[in-house]
Image 1 (cartoon, rainbow, N blue to C red):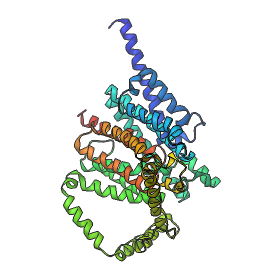
Image 2 (image 1 turned 180 degrees about the horizontal axis):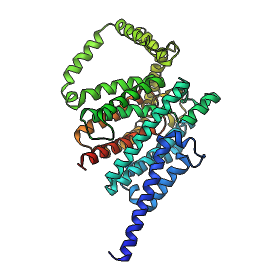
Image 3 (image 1 turned 90 degrees about the horizontal axis):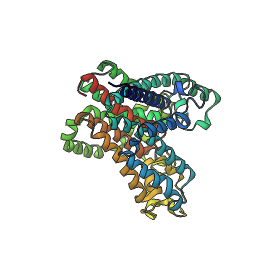
Image 4 (image 1 turned 45 degrees about the vertical axis):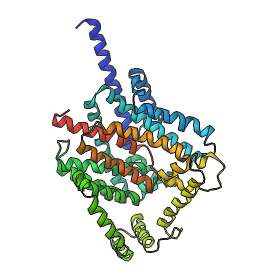
Length: 429
């Protein structure tokens, strides 16, 4: 090798090592808050330091990252839906929704750029290694979250509205790096992948017994965090994960028959079962309240504010009415008479209502392109469980708002990384 070629080789090797380190720290600032929260403000910031630095370095070192799909579709979506339409088409878009779509787009650009960096270089070993470290970060955050919950059982739930933190809760949440609202949602998305690793006994960084304990710890953490929608989604997705791909494909008719039977069972049966389950939780906990509230709602299904379930369910008719009034351009395109602020708590329906069919179609096309790009890299068995993780994201969005960037990190970086990590361990890569 000539001296000039050696210099170029060393430069390129050092360049890629540098960006890999920056990417790792960027992921850390979204998944290991016990570290990032306790660093100086700028040094520990995803939004203001590490994410911009990652994008800048990728633009300099590997600009093609921004011209390959799914980034190409994401940037088109961003230019139109985030940058142009809110000022010429959706002039009545609320500041809350403007901020929400901007934060969401920012996170997606960062994570898709990171994914594309490994994808266009075919550095799947590197993506697997990133998935490994990310998984460690998630495990540490689960542990610190349970420590925080030991001192204050409501601290994670209260994080959905941090302005109402007491001074003790604020300090506890920061110093322990506990998972917040969006992070707990992301843990739900991880469940199908861990079930896959357990069922197929794939070579991994932990044995199947340890992975089983981790699944149980995640379920315990989700329950202790006291977000009822997350608990419900976790157990629904866990059931499908345990059933597996082959059973799911062959079980349409049995599932349809079981569903029919469940519909015919008197509502009083479900009410009694829910009340019995609630007795296992502390009467002071939000889970106890939500289960009893749901039992009452099933027995008296009225879309009224007399129950929390009824109040949440009433938001769908409210949003649907606003959607029907302007289905093409959306509620944000004119001075609407409908008061739909509370509808922001329903992720998918809120987007459909405020953006209409046109804006919602842009979002769905962009989101589907990201999913399809990742899915085609996966084999059929793992692909089914990745589909379940995406389905969990969709299910959560039907019941709640999707909070934070952690769910996107899980779907775009961590889960694909774990797939390539187990291939590396199996020497199939």
